[in-house]
Amino acid sequence: MPAQPAPAPAPAAPTINGRLYNLTGPFNHRFFGLEMAQSALVPALFNRLLEEQQPARVIEIGCCKGGLSYLFALGSSLLGFDFYTYDIRDSLRYPLARADHQVADVFELDLQPVIAGYGTTLLLCDGGDKRREFETFAPLLKPGDIIGAHDLYRGDEYWGWSEISEADVQETCARHGLVPFMQEEFGPAAWLMRRKARDR
Image (cartoon, rainbow, N blue to C red; front, side):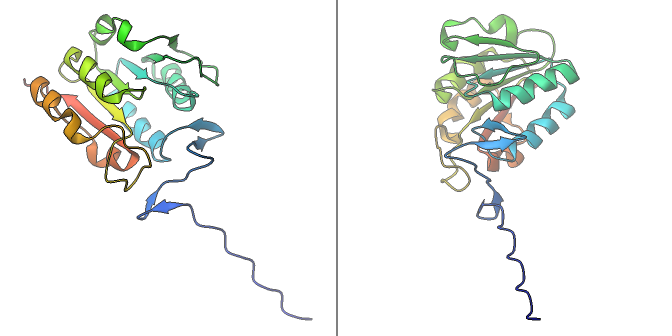
């Protein structure tokens, strides 16, 4: 009996410079079938952040199809934080278990009362103008609050979209006492992360 050929090895997960990238489709990573325009690293990173920092609320600007929003809504149900998500388009594809979801232009909303609430606010800028979102809402943060902006430019090393850079927010961060927060972890996932200094 002739020897059977060895089975072909399974294809390796797509990587860029050895970093997990894992795209499915033109731009979406899937997490249990949920499409999200994020790196495959993102669900684990935000899980760690939420468990360690225990924010009182998460505010998401720009939800796209809602894959990441779905995970935050699930986290809201399990961990007890309030979850707000806003998008100028009615593009949400997944039902959210526990969320305040609005189709609105975030620049026409007054988010100050939400951000100012007791406890830590996690504010995520992932809409159509990350730099303007960051510059608009960073001044409203309390000491200890966290702000992130997606599609961070890192020389196109890890992510195919480059909509905000460290240089873009340098002046805003200096003016409002924002310091790097978990940047080493979130940088490869294309997120810029800052925290309002507590001792300012």
